[in-house]
Image (cartoon, rainbow, N blue to C red; front, side, top):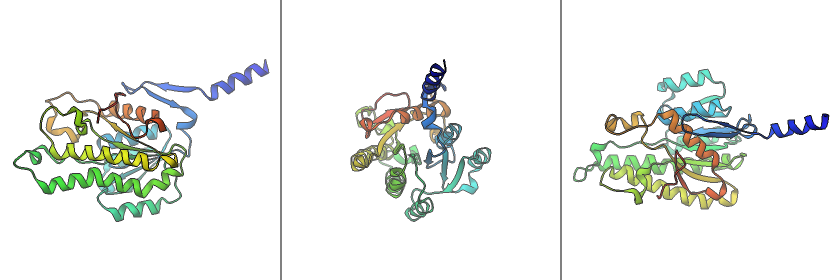
Length: 271
């Protein structure tokens, strides 16, 4: 009887716990995903999908490093941090290379299991009308959405390499899927996400030998401030549901999937 009890306890300790959250089908190995050593860093964490990443990873027991351009003004994020001892807030503007390097130096010696490059801007629909293109905004979108994630990844690659999970994830968009274009719109937002996808594929090949997994996830049309211009005109998903779905996809990323692009619901995007 004692041997049987021991066997059952051993099996229980490796059980995979499955929790269904909305439509995210959140699957986790409780021992691996809630280890005190597990850490996630999220850029653009002050609102929308970014703050949802913070909330959900914190609930899973991760140590969460949540970054924002101006932490003092990120009142919602500060409230989340106040309610969760495993959440810390750091200043980070992905357009500020010196600031990125400074935070990487501050966190030297801290393994980061999952680096989530979430920060991004849309540029506004009115700035992207052919014949009236606002090229100054175009530059800002490309710098934020493409150059920013590349610089953040370069600065924190050693932190990721020192971790157990070794994952770098880009929050992309199906708008960057060239194969999916059916009409002309969002010239530089689409261009920025297509460029981000190419950066991601390059990174996946560059760090493969170090055991680092790089991938792309997308939330689809989600009801955040980012989508305020189309709110009420097209169906929008709940931020909590879409973020749970992306986390579920991040969970499934292995080296075999490195460099690939998945929607929140598991559909592979023909980028």
